[in-house]
Length: 71
Ligand SMILES: [Zn+2]
Image (cartoon, rainbow, N blue to C red; front, top):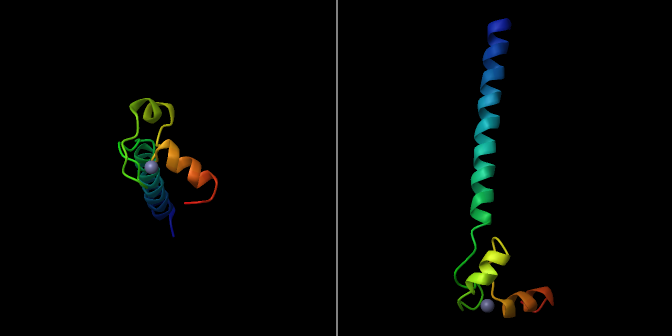
């Protein structure tokens, strides 16, 4: 293996890391999009709650049930 091979492998690894970072960033963006409707009961989630809790997926009622281990 010569220096050109090593450089090529480093470039490929850097490209892989960049691709992984892009995927993670996309996943994080998706995670902070709040749901309009509760994923449990499909009631509308008030916009104030959506803004207060980035990525919120449940209404207040279902969230409290989840926190109590009921759902
Ligand atoms: Zn709900």
